[in-house]
Length: 381
Ligand SMILES: [Zn+2]
Ligand SMILES: [Zn+2]
Picture 1 (cartoon, rainbow, N blue to C red):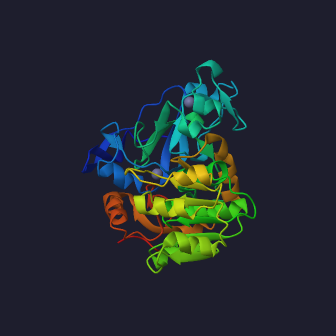
Picture 2 (picture 1 turned 90 degrees about the vertical axis):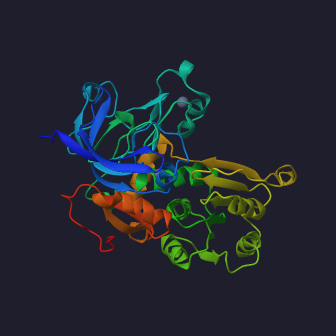
Picture 3 (picture 1 turned 45 degrees about the vertical axis):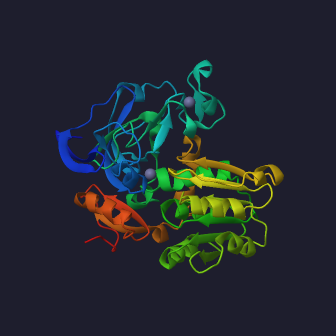
């Protein structure tokens, strides 16, 4: 394939200052894969980064979700040493983070490069919390670019005949992170009751994954009725508009017959965290998803007296991505209900501002590769 010499990317130069810039295509190392970006997903973390809410390696290309096409790869990628093999033209997605300690074999199974040197998290199969983590749009250039370079172990294939790229681009963070929250942290089992606070990107993902896990009652909590309508289409069995009730935690308990196995909070402000902690039943778990900044005060007495647990996630486990992609290809997620506004690549700055102002409909995606047909009507103008 003949590649252009230059590409466009959308980068954060310093907090509050973003720009499009032109550069050479990124250079590959021997273990890297060069990906042409088809679609990128937009999540709230990008708003946080633009607003200076996290330390990143400036200047950094934003974007932590992607569906793309492999266009080239480094010399070790096809070495036949039990590493995942990528060929030109393969359709792929990338998780937002990946661990240094581990690698994947050709079947996608995780193995330790050197157990002696693995961090504690990776040894416990919790590589989403690796001590030496690579993270898109933080210390690795992100997906708001025409091309990106990613280590081969952070590349997962999908079947283009079963899944279009405008859907696949939300697997990396939205579905992969919430899969980790639902299956590994909250450990939702068939027949359990769960409340999801927030029906934005991660909230929609958590609802979809709770449905996949076979949860019995799934109650979605938000202050926006249009988001609650999306929640119902995706799998919520009931909804609570928390603006219309006296105390949201009481409303959750009542709705779930005082049997609340888990609350998954996808908002991350003191008020919603307190609501979630108050609502979970004895031995239940409050799971925090996303990017938390503020300190929270909680009556931890209940953790001793009732065994209420608190845990959280901010990305997915590499060993789960094949399962998430498989579920997506098998039609287990209602993508048409999840995906909302479609932005063109030139509108990336507008997209971030629209998300900050809550003017994005459901999950926003960015069409980076303009050669792809426009498949959705709700385009931003
Ligand atoms: Zn994200
Ligand atoms: Zn590690």
